[in-house]
Structure formats: C-alpha cells, structure tokens
Length: 226
Image 1 (cartoon, rainbow, N blue to C red):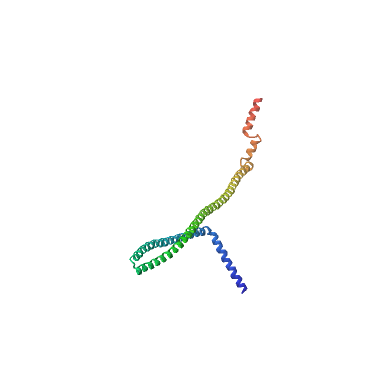
Image 2: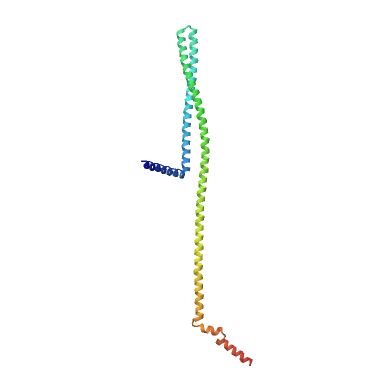
C-alpha cells in the first residue's frame, strides 16, 4: 500500500512538472490572456457602476417628486386648517409623514449608492492603471522574446555558416591535393620518358655535347682554325 501511495505521489509530481513545463512554454500567451480577462472584469465593473449610477439617479428623481408632493400636501393641509377641516388636515398630515418616510429611506439608499459608486470608480481607475502597466510589460516581454528568438536564429545561422566554411576549406584542400597529384604524375611521366623513353639516348648524347649538329659546328670551327 505504501508503494502504491508513493507511485501515486510520483505520478502527481510528474503531472505537476509537465504542467509547469507547459505553463513556462506559454507564459507570455497566458499573461496576455490574463490581461484580457482582467479587462473584461473591468468592463463588467463599469456596467455595474453604470447600474449603480442609474439607480441613484432614479432615487434622486423620485425624491424630487416626493418633495414636490410634500410641498403640495403641506399647502393643502394649511388650507384645510384655514377652513377648520381638521379630519382632512390630519389625513394630509399622515400622507406627508408617509412620503417623508419614503423620502428619508430613499435618501439613505442614495447615500449608500454614492459611497458604492465612489468605491467602484476608485477601484476601476486603480485596476485600469495597473492593467495599462501590465500591457506595457506585455509589450516589453513580447519584444524581448522576439529579440531572443532572433538571436537564437542568428546564432544558428552563424553556426551553419561556420560549418559551411569548414566544408568549403575541406573541399578546397581536396581539390588542391587532386590537382597537385595530377601535376606530380605528369612530372613523373616526363622524368620516366627522359630516362627510358625512345628519345632518352638522343637526349643524353645531346646533353653530353655529342649531338650531330653540335659536332658539325665544332668541326667547322676546328677547320677554320687551321
């Protein structure tokens, strides 16, 4: 059982290492997607802020209407008192109380919405600034990755060029050796021809000064001397 548990642990470790390799290989893509997700989150926060602002505006508009109604009821109650219609004045006063209660409750809601609106605005602004900074870092990361890729390609190309130069030198040396071999062979053939060829003896006679033309010239000179 202990062995099986260790095997299971090893497999989990292998999976974790594989996941880390995948994450490292796609780090920039993951970072960019996280920025996109954060931007979507800001968009949703802005929609929520717009909803809060709309609710606040509606409540404020409702309170303005209630104030007008309360003023109207107060005027009506004053007239009712002036004609000594106490029941009507009391009923109008009760309506005023209910409207003021609603207005006060809505004012509390408005104040809460204003606080929430300020907090949301501050959070959105802060998050937007951070995301802009992350966008700049993403651009730098992409540029760095591109430069590193170009450097690797340049290094590989340089290595390929070095290999080609080595091959060129090797081929040149082989060509020179072949040409030298041809020249050496031709020289050897000429030497052999001089030594044992059909004209070898005549060349030796000529070299020794015993050739026919040379002998004739010498004979003429000897005769002239006499």
